[in-house]
Length: 182
Image (cartoon, rainbow, N blue to C red; front, side, top):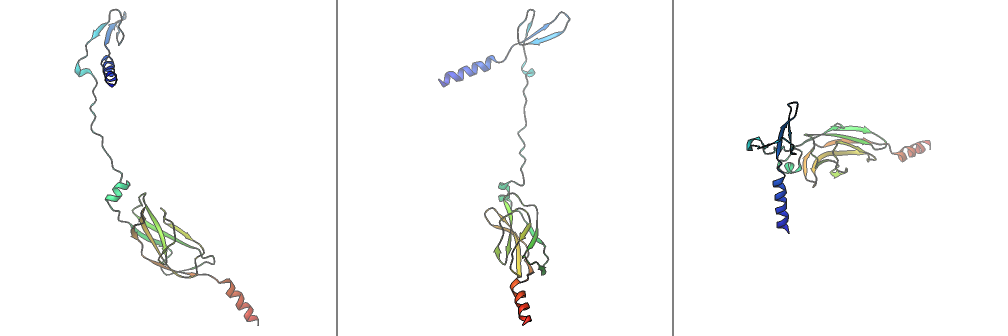
C-alpha cells in the first residue's frame, strides 16, 4: 500500500510540471498560458530558465542571555549596596529599612538577587535591587546582597554594610513618666 502511494505521489509530481503555451492575439500582443488555445505553440523550457534558488546556509545568531551560554561562560557580577550608607543611623519607630543595591552587568534571566541580614537570608530571590524591610528590631544590623543562580549558588556578593536602627520602646517611656511623678 505504501509503495502504491509513493508511486502515485511521484506521478503527480511528474505531471505537475505544466506545459507552457505561447500565442499572439489579433492586436499583436504576446500571451503565455498553461492552457492550450487555437494557434498556440508549445514552448520548450530550457534547464537554465527554470527558477532554482540556492540559499546560503542559515546564519545562527547566538543570544548572550541564553541559559546554555550562561552555563558555559560564567558571568562576573559586581554587586554593591548603594543605600543606606555604611555605619548609618536610621530612626524609624516602625522598624522600616530600605536597602538599595546595584549589580553589573545586568542579571540574566536565571540569576537573582537576595538580601542577607545578620548572616540570615531575609528576602525571596528577585531581579531588582530594591529591598523594603519592616518591623526590624532596633540595634546594629549587617546587610549583604548576593547574586545567585536558579540553584542557589552564590555568583557574587556585596561588601557588608552595618546599619544602626533606633526605635522608641513604647512601654519604657510610659514607665519613666509614672516613676517621675512619684
